[in-house]
Amino acid sequence: MAKEKKTWVVPEGQELTEMDRIILSFQHRGKKVPTRDLIKTPEQIDGIRKAGVLNTAVLDAVAEMIRPGISTLQIDELVYNFTTKHGGIPAPLNYEGFPASCCTSVNDVVCHGIPSAREILEEGDIVNVDCTTILNGYYADASRMFVIGGKTEPRWQQLVDVAWQCLKIGEQVCSRPYVFVGDIGNAIANHAHKNHMSVVRDLCGHGVGLEFHEPPDVEHYGHKGTGMLLVPGMTFTIEPMINLGHWEVCSDPDDPTGWIVLTADEEASAQWEHTYLMTENGVEIITH
Ligand code: MF3
Ligand code: CO
Ligand code: CO
Image (cartoon, rainbow, N blue to C red):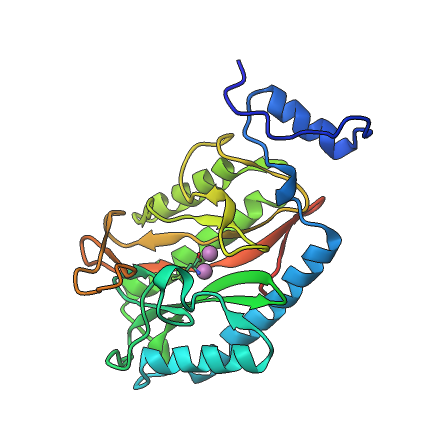
């Protein structure tokens, strides 16, 4: 019995393409398949690509200036100024009450850290800077880790490296179309666990492009063959959050906005993110 809704519909009188046939066969077997609106048109893909180019330039500018002694607010100011100077809008600003242009998540902050003049970066801090750029209405989303001063504790460096490897492993799973979101999560979690680290469960990757967050949810754990089928034309992020300790997170009790997410056990957390386009030959990185 099919357990998923029949979301893939071919308009009456329209001839089936090869892609329709493949998707319909998965749907018939009860798998979760996309809706047609998640398949971007060539024009939309072009727009998302351009947003990706600007988003990458923003992160490159951050990489140039990030160093011991600066505040995370200085990063935020750079992101705002650079993005708007090039005709873009930082998507986080005022998004559901988020008060800044990017997220800066230091050490035991898992994600959604809020830049602050009081937060001065020190040598050995590990910082995720997460930027999302809107350009001509199209979105691209990516984040990188920075080791402040270039050196940190070996265990923290290992965390940063394993989180990066997790992103690359997720990407490798997507080296062909018609894989499932659960295939990505399964491979990522296996790699994290092999390294005695854990995968955050409360936050996930997502479709992106016409909006900040679209279906599907891209969980970084789970079972092969579950979650949505990824087909050519879909644009989505992979953004594993990996913890040195336990996967459990909590919101920062001192943050009145409720946005800042911390590890519950106060151990460090690391994350990398790219926006991807699924093609007939597997994913392409849109935020290089
Ligand atoms: N960029 C984050 C993501 O990867 C979302 C941040 S929401 C914000 O999905 F409001 F905090 F910016
Ligand atoms: Co992001
Ligand atoms: Co994202």
